[in-house]
Length: 275
Image (tube, rainbow, N blue to C red; front, side, top):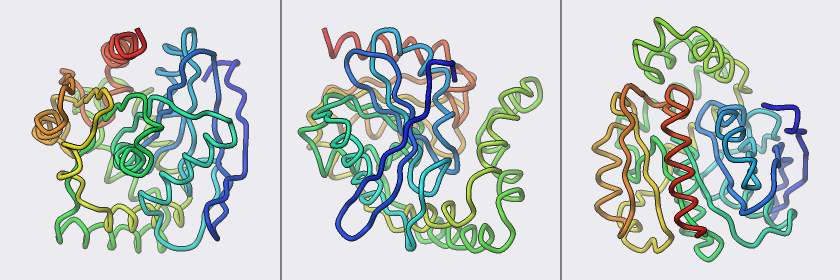
């Protein structure tokens, strides 16, 4: 992050739950909110903040249980996290924004769009899917949640890393490997477990896709092993007028592996929506 990115903090209240959300709020202009995936933090978006901040107000929060944000007992459902973002925007007196998310952040963005449709100026879905977990995936998340609580995040980070990045990146781009591993290993185990349980119980949003009216950009890496291009193509078919871009030589964390192409796609999309 650049020196302009001075982290700010706020307290967000939703019902009986209160959680402190850490975030960066950078630049000026139309608002873009970018939501990271599991088990990352807001530094996932460092290249996008640098690319967009000249013409946009870019807000990158840590989702509950991740980075500098607080943890509340119980599963961190997608709806709870969407509510956190709505509360953050309320505190910042922002009515409407472009809402984007990668992986779990995409699940949260879809939940936000369903719960607060009139607050979504446009939607950006990267390396994500609309389908719910099947039984095997749900069981695996429960196993991983127990492992995180029992052993911490190092082993989980080591196991996830080859699935997050292309083999080429793992072999030849140590700075990206270090960043991704560092985000995962530094995540609070309890926060990670809560997010895993929240993802396991999330709604299938496939039938909701046809109701989305906000302009939508869908991005996916050609080598994404976690949410492959077929998942992005399904969303593209169901969301009327959506744009799909498949980014070559990129895996799940495509915004770090191919930031130039990713950022160019964002700028083209946002320019068209705002123009």
